[in-house]
Amino acid sequence: MDYRKKTVVASVAGLTLEGMDIMFISFAMTMIISEFNIDLATGGLISSITNIGMLLGGIIFGVLADKFGRVKVFTYTILLFAIGTALTGLATNIEQVFIYRFIAGLGAGGEYGIGMALVAEAWPKNKQGRASSYVSVGAQYGVILAALLSAVILPTLGWRALFFVGVLPVIFAFIVRKNLEESPEWLAAQKNKKINKQHEKSKLVQLFETPRTSMTTISLIVMATVQIAGYNGLMIWLPSMLQKTQGLSVSSSALWTISTAVGMIIGMLTFGRFMDRFGAKRTFGIFLLASACAVFLYSYATGSVAILIGGAVVGFFSNGMFAGYGALISSFYPVQIRSTATNTIFNFGRAIGGFSPIFVGYILQSYDMTVVMIYLAVLYCISFIVMLTLKRGSNKAIQSVEIK
Image (cartoon, rainbow, N blue to C red; front, side):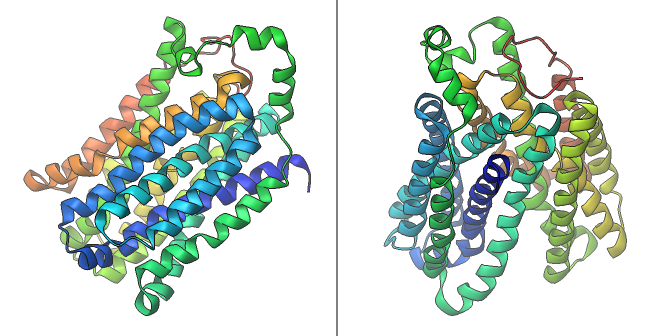
């Protein structure tokens, strides 16, 4: 297996495990709430604390990966992720659950940007879109894997066993990553003393070093926030909204979830190839506007067939864009701060966008599904406007994906 394929396989494994672990909490939440006798709000804090851990882990390990190497630091994030996952199954009170999920979040937050930086540095610019899409699909693999494992383990062995099993593939990913060589581009940068001297400033400071760089960083954070907010708003609330407005059963809403996930996977793979062929700006523009139209029109869908097909179409456009963020963010920053940028920007978006389900809940208390879909459509329009401000040459460090 050549180096390029190794970077994709290892990064896919990492994101699959991250997606699987996050969904473990969703499937096990009812049992955790019951065992520790906590209310729903306290249970919801588990995800919030995990997101905070991801944000801090993304920043810390992003900086470390830029300084000490992608592969070396990635192995530490996987190890930390494994420890946090296993310890969750040993928690004796809710406070310990919070601590262990924070630890797991630290590792998970660091993994994403490092993997994306490795892929960006291993693949030529005309193939980075599809390479990024292959990695991004890993999150959906994790959702499917979590659903299958939860269906088998939870009824028989309980929620603790679920987290014990969850640590095994993490060990596998750790071994795979140990056999992966360091990024040649990063190694070359380390040998260039002149470049190293230019980048002695704090890596976080460099994300806001000039007005144009600051605008680029802020714009990318806004786009990442909309991506996460849209995904969370759709996947967390739509099944229950459809049960209420369309009279779907729980099993039918589960079928909707699968249909939407399949649409997402196809959308990601399509987005990657479009990005390589037409450029990032055109591709994001098409998918953002199509997402705004799709979610708005979906509020008028009636009947099982329309709901299933519509869900797949919404998933295709709204989450297909997820495939491009790793390549897009990486393209605006030099190798010396690439992991820092990717991890910081996307995890900021994840932390802020994670509040979207709360806002959607407030909307549903006073309004209906149509207003929620208008809210999501407006988010995608805002992201489209912000995307237009990204210009080729706004950062001298642009080295990868062409912004056409």
